[in-house]
Image: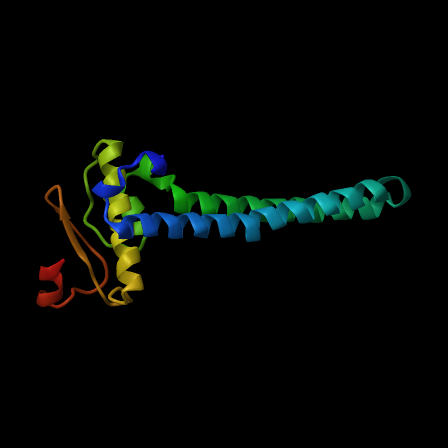
Length: 164
């Protein structure tokens, strides 16, 4: 999809944000999920070897593996939530924004495409502000869209919020 975008239509920072996010996901998959699955395969092989000679040990190992696999699934779900929040289509923009620790009034439901655009815009704005060190506990960013205002934390000074 990224290859089909017209590079001249997007500021350079958008592509660097895409690339940074791609690398984050790649690292999470490599260092997390891939490692979990590789360890599970090794442990399953061990359980298979123990099955005939030490069935109780094999059973214990399989129970331990079940717990490890549940943990791996939780990490996959968490990673998937950073790519696309399942809360957005299920419960709407208000809950999705609040899951990012963005305080907002209760918003009416909009078509999913609009909610996605607002959610990802707020998330990107929050992410860029964090990197620029203007977002922290007690700071706020104001985004006015569709006649609603989403605010996080305390209000910024009038000067800062007017620039946003």
